[in-house]
Image (cartoon, rainbow, N blue to C red; front, side):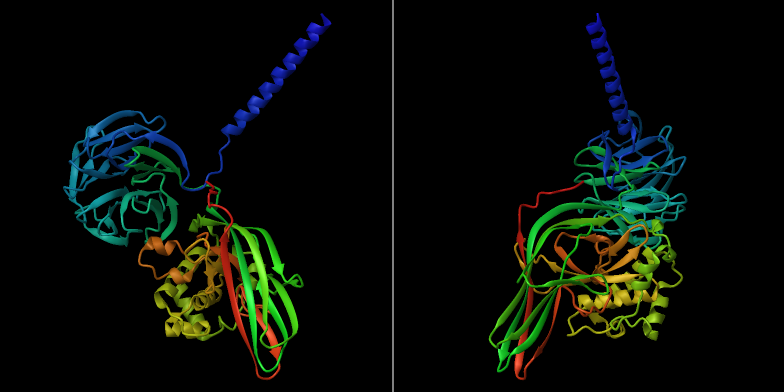
Length: 551
């Protein structure tokens, strides 16, 4: 009896433990999971095989189908089709909900119809503002229409359908439209991307990967975006905003061998040489697995910007000698894309004072105390107070003002801006100067670059600016890309970086080791009639196949 009673008590204890574990597990599952913008949280079967426009009426999804010539009413939880009405025309595309009625644009008829959701009665007809209308959305007051061939997004006059405002479409095949209460969203089936657009300026503020290969209609349900894919015949519920501020993908495992080479020629000797190599550090998109140096006699220092530098010192080097200082880096480098909401960037006062003081300081390449720079910054920025839009205004200006051209040397920002041409370094100096003059912290980063093949050599390098945005930190703003013709291509230069760059240098200006250079530098003294030729390059070698991906 005692044995039986003990066994029963143990079984009861086991049951209680199992129940507790199950309860905790279910509680964990009930908690909202952090998901980056663009992540699919639900997939439903499309109600037809030729779906185009989408809209949300506050309770149900509605989906247009140009083959069935219907507008389907879909349960947002189950995907069940619970009703339909006839489409007003025979090629229904974009669909919008104004709070009481539907609006549907017909591509072939080039008309926009106002439709009663009860029975499909057509209440009003207006002309579409273009020949190939596709996307349609309601912004609370009026309609926006996209045209996939003309590359336009148009805000229209409801009385006759004429455009009252025209924005450039993000890319070359704009399709579905949605409005989330603040921003426009547009899908593009060629780029397979979704774009968040400032409806005032037309600037693309964010780029998300489309959930399927043929993205068409978009809808906004008050929390999530919905996207219908024409190839997969699926409806995707997509995260618009979450706690994740960036996403990594396509990780590259690589070995980069960086060589600083000094060749000595002439009748005398090289009395002393200091070779400086900027040492890369971990960054959100960059993980440093190991670093080795050759020769082994070196010291690690930090400059005034807290940049780590390996210092190699040599003495009494005869003519016809070659001195090599080498750093080998094993790194994992990922594509990074930040999800920046301008309304989450606070104000300049939200920036930590130490960062603001250090990275708004003057410098000989910036000349922020120059009247030309000061007045130009005031003109470009105007009354703008939002850090993101300050950076965006300056990015746009520098991109429009400058043309890429190597003039020789690195001139200061006023000279470059007046001249109208510059190198990547000079673009950086101009952008940083205007940002700092406007009170926005800015710095530059420098990198070795993959030039084509994974196994490649870089002796050209690249430098670009970063700005500090509250709640996001240091963000890439490559001002050299500000002259791209498509809004999507310009947006890729803000908060996005491919896995082609090993960043070695993060500097605010003149460095006691690197000067105004990046990646590497040197200092030396010689006897008379001695020539020292310096070469520096980075050799890329893949360590393994680039198969690492993160969602």
